[in-house]
Length: 58
Image (cartoon, rainbow, N blue to C red; front, side, top):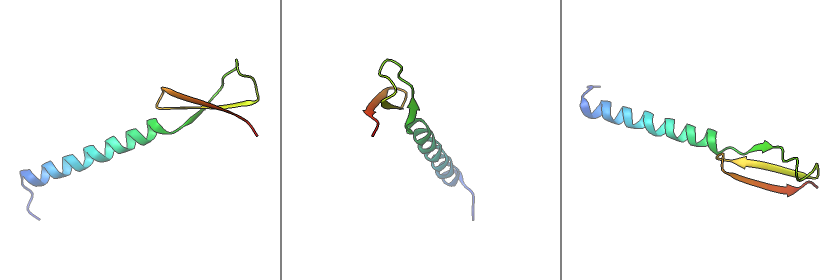
């Protein structure tokens, strides 16, 4: 395979897209958080460090 400028650009773009996708998945994964004001009957999770959702435990 002949390595030229186009091949390097394609390889660099592929690596950048994969890194961005991995970062998005790592940040976007919901994480459990503790909300003491709601009490122990509530289950809360935070996504992307901004969106927090809470629901009553079954």
